[in-house]
Image (cartoon, rainbow, N blue to C red; front, side, top):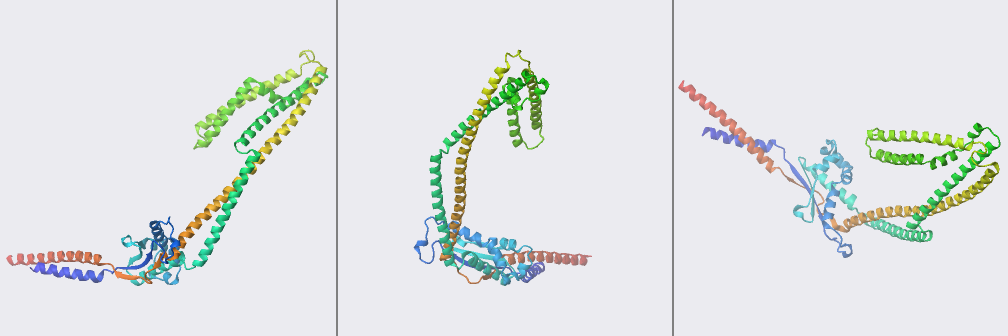
Length: 435
């Protein structure tokens, strides 16, 4: 019985100790009314696409947003609070410890914080509520309406401008044959230009060959004449050579493969890249060797003395005159073909520039329209969808569970300890008497 009495006394003492030693915790709460429909009775403010659940979640997130928290912490009275000053990162601390919810999923939004400093907690949640109403909901309804109308007018003006410019582009495309037809015209013009350029290069090479032969027939030194062989003549001869043509084709394929491999390769010096580069270098050397052979053969052919190639001086002069006239005609055709390609490119470039202008204007207009929607949402808030229920926070003690748990724990430990000590003491005395 003595052990039990002592244990009870220990438990009571532990409970009293827990009551006065453990710090009391409090919860500060402030409430806002968040309505599905405006509380002004203005039926025109109700939109059919208004999602109230999204609106509630957005409101809760805005209250905990850094924008509102910074506005709260900028207030001198809040900045002087001890629980704020001792925080290393007050913004993160406030965001982590602030609770924003809807009890019972009703149209009541609750802003609350828990802690051991009731007056400071009350000021914090009250100022958070005030900052939200001031910075997000706001009181400047008339200014917001004017700004919204200005932005809406800008969006409408841009939409009209986009429509007008798009119509003008379509008319220009019809007039110039842009689009698929322009692509086809440009492809045909480029192919024609390429053919004319090759024919002109061939004529130029033929003129060089004829002049060299005439120089040899006129008695000039063959070695001196060989130095006058034009690069265009060699280039034309290389293009006509089957072996050189095959090497050039293989080179083009390998260079294309090298470009693709460089785009795919993660390492700039991979083994695959090295093999392609080695193959290209080998083919390039082979082409250079073949070009040297072609040039030597051409020089030998053009510097033969009269009688070995079946041509005399008079025949060569006639050929030179005709080839020169052909070259001049081809040169004029090349000039016209170049102008034709440029005209097609200029008309296409003008249309593309206009399209880029429309795309830029569309991007700006879309951003303005998105901002208009956000302003519209904000106007819903201004239209008395959100109003304060409490001017200041309510504070209640919120540590009953903690106190009971602490009391029971300490009481159990104290009772056990005291019972053990008493039992040991009694047992010791009994053993002493027997002795």
